[in-house]
Length: 338
Image 1 (spheres, helix red, strand yellow):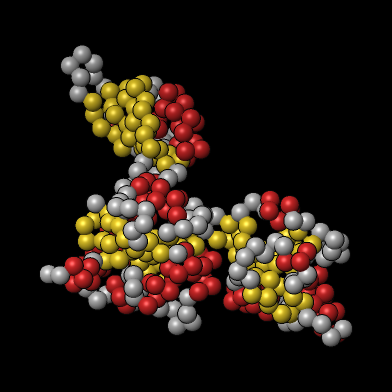
Image 2 (image 1 turned 90 degrees about the horizontal axis):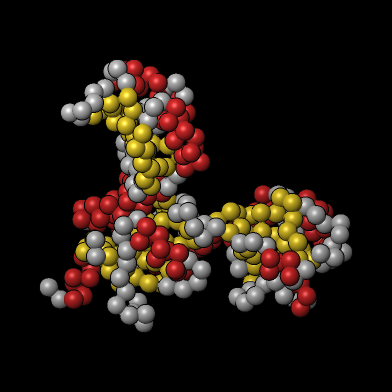
């Protein structure tokens, strides 16, 4: 088989090659147990040693939605903001996991600090009408015209002109080619430094990284569907495991029922579905039981103290790597969208 034909048989996963999502995406893949190998920083392809049937394509974050939509890649990781802005209306691409836990930011409307009477999106509606009555249009600089236009129309703001921009938007009002901006911000610091303020009700979208897929392209081969399921289940299970620790301890008691009842006296500290209780076989001492339960990280010390109150010793805590549910919500979403 030629190299070209071999490449066509692989499941293709598009990952960001640049921008704020590049390094965090590599870290996320490592944390999921599927690290990506890239032979050279100049190479635009890579591979996942744990999944030989997957080829990684490094693409500009802004291009990933299009690549998945046209079938150049079956799966991709990009920002939810980019996905919603660039996807086509026929919904050929779907978001299987809308929050991968990193790349958080907000798409917001921001106006000059000097606009003292404009503090909310409703004030902006009045201002847009006032501009229109004077024969002018409110000019808004943005890189996301589709999302912005829909947001404004939904709030009764119909009189405005969108100013396309590819560079730094924060300078637009001061430079005079826009009255206000709609831009992505993580902390708001850059907006404040440029004497801009966000509006109440002016958050258009809360965004983060997401996993997207082309269901039609994935359905072409059974192997692609299998690999896609493997990938998304590992990601999903890793995300679900994030808040949890596994606690184990040895607890004395007269019977498994008596020990479990003692643990269950505080149900919110007794694990997801109650404790697992197993007899400890010890030639010197009897009536000891091994306890295992899952607790959320913010309840870890409270759960440790509870086990101590129950007579627990040898208490150990470990971070959970994966937590698989009875079925994968992401895979179910993929099947239903095909």
